[in-house]
Length: 469
Ligand code: 4AD
Ligand code: MG
Image 1 (cartoon, rainbow, N blue to C red):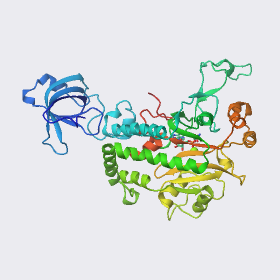
Image 2 (image 1 turned 45 degrees about the horizontal axis):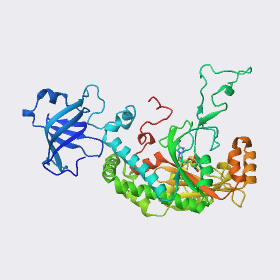
Image 3 (image 1 turned 60 degrees about the horizontal axis):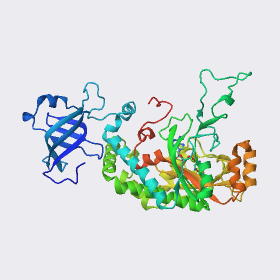
Image 4 (image 1 turned 120 degrees about the horizontal axis):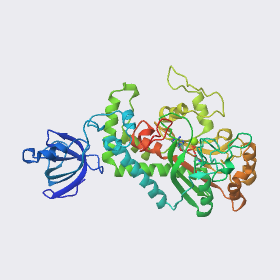
């Protein structure tokens, strides 16, 4: 906001009033940066009827002279010469007042919360991260591909899909047996919102070499956690001729690049968010406070290698550990083959290794059908990247490229081969080793901003409670 303008110039700025003190000091913000610009009115010589319209939340155009500020904590201010009121905001009903509102309260005001410091900072960081993601892949020979949102396939085979239908939900056509007649549906077959663009991305990787998607994905899971959304954005690179090691290298390099990007471009916002967190931490008992401040945490991730550990090694560690002296895990790990819960993932990352961890070579039984079977016949070349404070941020794998092995797996799981004929074609015509992964964008934004709840890093969170607008 005006940083490059020379002192003494007459300038014009348009924005929203964040605070208005003593009928004299307007803190104006146009959304571009965290700092407000102080605009000083000589109220004795100013039209009183205009001053009356200036309240918190109103939108103004201000003309005035840029001068060095007398006040603390800011270098420039404007001596107001002219004010045009674009729109007023009734102080009795405008909900965003210059005081601390709880995030729960602000979630109810999702359309206005971006006018607070915290949310505008988070959303600028979110935007910068989006740019960094495209920039990384474009610089590294990847092609951006758009995968379908409406699809007939369940990429993860987990059955967590939102049905898409043009049928009248209240009066659907029924068969003689009383079942819904989906043949009458516009698509002539069952369709759903995509849970992942991976399978389609694989088809393009096997023609373009290296591709990535970055789009919305949907999961109809009824999980009310601070890490799950029903609609979230996922980045999914897919690379021909990559084995699992190269996939892990890429995931690590990619994440570090995006974090470095926000360190390079969003320092004002990060500093603000860090201070917010430090204030919040002061209210917690000493042993619950985080060891590193936000910016130090981000630098730590960029500067240190992620620890790579097999599932089998991780199980050994977990069997011999307790989360703390008194407590056992809520779900103790008794045997090889058990799925890890988030308490285990967080223990490994936050207590044991104290750095991001890539877990790989998981038991085939707990992972998706498309993952490459290892020579031991019981593990697959899967990898999950686990992050401090977040848990799983990336899930990926080397893909099964052998037709017979994949066909057998599909049969074992009772999936109809006919539904995946096109996917199997990749293994019929010019098959090759290939790999990819999915990074949950909101989880990356959570990490980069230090926010505690995934609902607060996406403009309009879709969860079982929030889908009104
Ligand atoms: O581990 P997931 O389910 O993997 C896939 O969908 C693969 N097809 C990706 C691939 O290999 N191309 O999801 C990938 C990531 C998770 O690690 C997590 O970060 C995020 O997506 N994620 C969610 N984020 C928010 N809300 C949810 N409900 C999420 N489910 C997964
Ligand atoms: Mg996963």
